[in-house]
Length: 255
Ligand SMILES: NC(=O)C1=CN([C@@H]2O[C@H](COP(=O)(O)OP(=O)(O)OC[C@H]3O[C@@H](n4cnc5c(N)ncnc54)[C@H](OP(=O)(O)O)[C@@H]3O)[C@@H](O)[C@H]2O)C=CC1
Ligand SMILES: O=C(O)C1=N[C@H](C(=O)O)C[C@H](O)C1
Image (cartoon, rainbow, N blue to C red; front, side, top):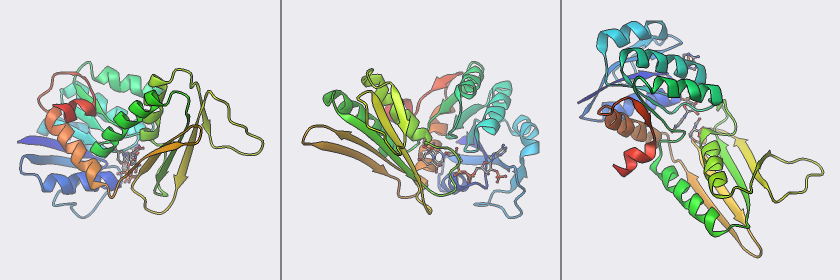
């Protein structure tokens, strides 16, 4: 049995995580917190105030905290986990370099797993994109991500991960160009990046590789958020048995 705590419990992803945890036999929710108070239980779990997080962590000592919140709060939660030795799984996106360094600092004291996308389909997309990028070394590459109208960060965390993957293969691509307007001819060293926001779209990512007389498009579409919640809980179960360190979702998939 893996015992978890959930942060951002009343958010879109927090609710999905609580619903997915309720469906799992080997997963128990010790407690869940939210910044804004919530009167009704969610998936049978009473939602506590974020102000009580550290005291709850001390009292319950869960195996892993599962976090989908915002960068500043995720860093604070990771610090509390580092102090108590509780594992930390975060799907939060929008960290700057300093934020990533803070999470890595926490991973010196406890097990931390961060993934910009917990979908197995996106993990497969990442591999396919790396292979296609290597196979088409002269292609112009454009990335488009599409999300619901309440998403805060742009481009998405997944888009940034895909860009890192592409640049890891194509060292000649040194400039990320975010949208184009007016006189804006394309240069060979750029990757175009486009972020669209509409309705309640759970998440779409397309990488377009354009060459002479042919173009290849690789696309992932999330049907709903349950795929992210399932992946995060798989990661939590996997992380519960790990020593302090910095871990990747590929390690969960490949195990
Ligand atoms: N890795 C993945 O697979 C996925 C990652 N995400 C990422 O997860 C994050 C959350 O997304 P989503 O659930 O849609 O967002 P929501 O806005 O629906 O939920 C965010 C939650 O975090 C809480 N929160 C935000 N800021 C703070 C803060 N400073 N202190 C305490 N609590 C805070 C909110 O509390 P309150 O209710 O009080 O506002 C809310 O409960 C985003 O970064 C998103 O990109 C999303 C889907 C999949
Ligand atoms: O905010 C979202 O909704 C999502 N965020 C993640 C991201 O920024 O890549 C993952 C997924 O695309 C949904």
